[in-house]
Image (cartoon, rainbow, N blue to C red; front, side):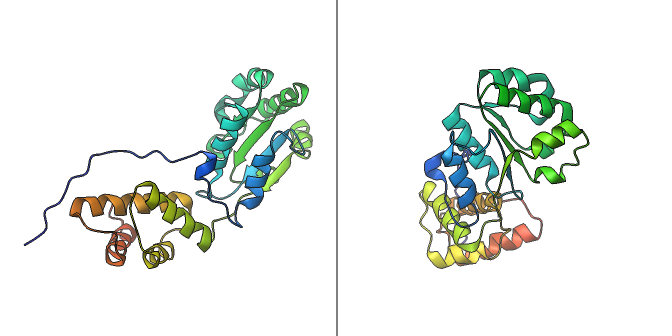
Length: 230
């Protein structure tokens, strides 16, 4: 007889973006150290660069909480940047999501320097790869501090997956975590998605998160199946 499914409440667990939830490893320790060092930064403007899913947004959220920075959308730098810098620190997250407003960025950096505040720019690429054509902006960008956050390694991925399960009060054996980490995309966003899928199916089936269940979910994921009602 097939075990009846338990339909879990459709609760969305927000990604934890505070300092205590941050897992530190070789791939992100330099970036974390720089964020923790604020306001004693080597330059008023810092560019945090790294691949998708590496944890850039988590670090940016931590810095915003500590600094009280105002977040400016990349497509509104020219409209809101200078005014924001006159009030305090500024965060521009996901710079790659919009065409770079070179004039707006130039004026924002100038305003940050003139007001003695800080600017954190989060991007997938370093400034040299932004294709800047405005000479004045290119000159300003040569003076910024850059720090790279790398793709998470196995140890960091295992620590993150273990913590994500613990946050959901789900006990998972180490070999299951190892199996999962070796088969999902090497990104923190993939880890969050995998844990969410496994937790949901385990709740529906009233079973534990096992290696067999992890293998089943990964196989469905690889096959492009996104329906968790299995």
